[in-house]
Length: 277
Image 1 (tube, rainbow, N blue to C red):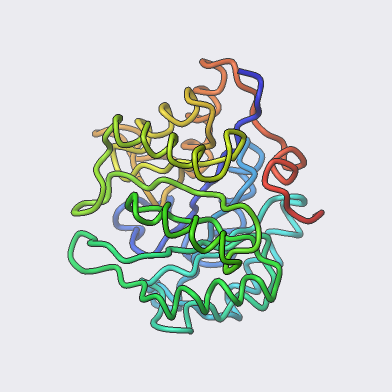
Image 2: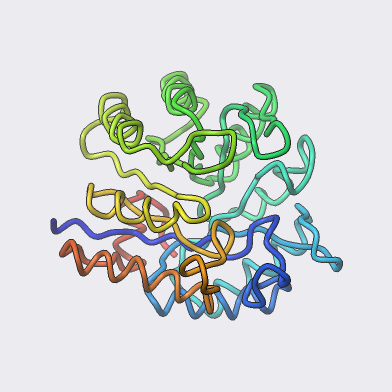
């Protein structure tokens, strides 16, 4: 395969703590340093959450602004993707950072079960987040925790609620949601191609021990891959990951294995039809 592979690094998330792994970057300065290392290792998208002074997830636009500014300064060309996820706030506070005009933002278009709760994405909130992304020229990454989310993204694209052809990320391995199932994964790819075209880029993310499994499936199938300490704090059962960069390097090794080049930031922006850096 000759098509470049985009590597997304999910640097922090809402849940991992330094008790889970001391390498988890919590403060904005830690996040910038960790992302810079991952960028140099081959990541070209940073999926970003921010934390408050107590290390708890927040949607504070000022903290997102500081992170975005630092990443753009120290990682020129990097695609900055901000999270609108539900662990960081409620209702429209989840989209309070969209006026910052990041390159991308996550968009979950439906609800599903999480390990201990329901991840609620009511239709009116989804529509509002999508409208804010259109207003501020932010490309959504559709986080598909279920097949219905891919179909909903197609409907939103057809009726104009999503402006550009969706970039869908399959999320597998969340407890009580979609497990890491190869037949389902292959059907996801088939569905994306049927709905959006054979040349549509897509991504996959695996949670916990399923991270490397989904990395392998995605790279070998011609898709793009997400890694990072948000989703998995270990290299293996007995070994903590030393950094986000260490997890990125595992994906780079898979790209070498399957003879795929790692996408540069310029190539990643072209593949995703993003505005210039």
